[in-house]
Image (cartoon, one colour):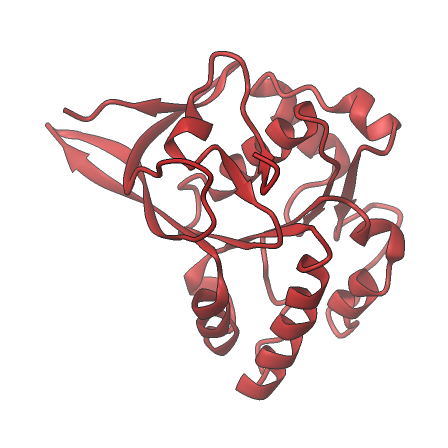
Length: 230
């Protein structure tokens, strides 16, 4: 198990569906449209990693600190003590105290912060134009991904949440091609009901068995629960 970052929680079998944990030195791509569950999955990974004694940096382009804590608490993921002890570092790109300029190179600012990058797991939720320029070329995309890969090789792992309709397609193409773990979330209809699905497009470095398709639901006060579909 030394080759993975564990994220198992009591009463939650998600880790058993996904090889036991997140492979070390890996890129994890979580791709989904708006509202399907990519942020919830990233939060589940983060909380599970913390409870297994791994440190996490979580960079959000969507929620303020108060909103994030409220969402985590609604899932029974209480990370307040971990935030105080800096085991869980939360960075929001939106703050009532700081006015961000979309022209600022925020990704370079993040990559220049030693404190943010010292965590075991680094989560970007969600990659948007604030971090990835809309006019970024293919060559620039390769250069940025190479820089991120070099950081991950320092016995870390990076998790990227992406909405394919709201990101530079050149960068997304590069990210898809180099990701060690590629999870695609979507909805489908089954017996007249819409269910959320997780399709494992790629999972390199797994310590155990990996399910190819996982149905799941999000339950208030509990978090993510895998479901049976047959």
